[in-house]
Image (cartoon, rainbow, N blue to C red; front, side):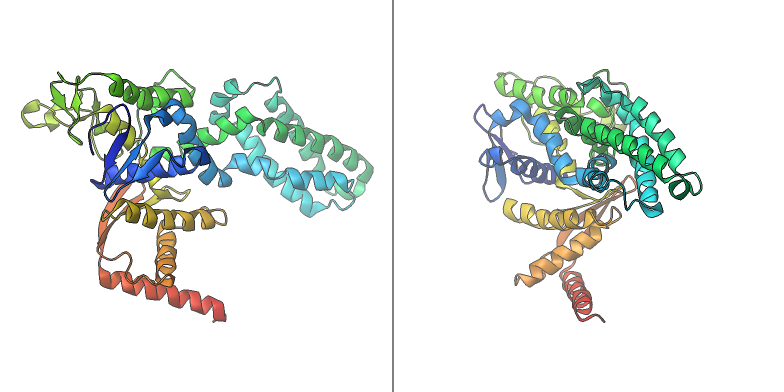
Length: 402
């Protein structure tokens, strides 16, 4: 990585952690059309305008919400609105036991679960509304239990219809509450903090159980972004130390790799891990910021598995190959949250083979994440060709119905 100045910040291809952060940065900025021109690439580096840091926490969480938010409970609350309105428009004439089961399962597993979750309790203070969701859910629960009494729908059709009218009206108001701008901002992000983001780093900022600031947007900005802005404004001519990753000068030995999962330790608490009890693995705030972007650079499913292709021949290849896997995962994840990252990788092989590129992933490093551990492997060219042909064969069999 190159030195920073007040005009641009440069990140250069380095180890897999820096490279994952670089891919994450570009994905986050591409995710919002307003920032498409805020960064540029060379063969081995990417630079961006520090002005994007002014509201970077919004961009950060917006990326995860847009790409992973489609399959969490929050989205499943919102997505049932059309079905509920259809029932209402038909005046419940066709409502039967099958519909009741769907309604009950959705209410119990999605709505009621969400309203009683720890995440809801931590986020509700940021929602500007007097609407009492928990009270409404409790009221809805009584109505649903009544409807589920044996033969209630058929033996008490008029009463059932009256209950349904009130129930659906309440449920639509609950959906309306979860559809407000503040709810869309906080609820899905809170969930994804503990499903996606904490797969890469943990224990600091809003992922520190002891944090006092419950507004994770503000906490991320203050912990990871503001120190970068301050660093860029300071004079570092007399700094005594250097960042162990990029060599930038630093005034104080404050930040370390310790917050990255399975990649570091608390330098202040475990001095015995260092030579002669003197730790030298401190980093600058700019590198700490970059490492916070690792979860955006990986491709994850919703079961704690992730993958990253450390293709370091160029920034363009690094971005292209990882984005190909990412796009395949995003297409599949809505069908099954258990979709394997390896399946997305295999699909990426097939896509590149179809475009005329042979052995596209040969002799590159794959980093996989599973059950809190990283695994590192090199894909030989021969294995790349075999996997490509295997994927192509599977695809052809599906097409012919064999």
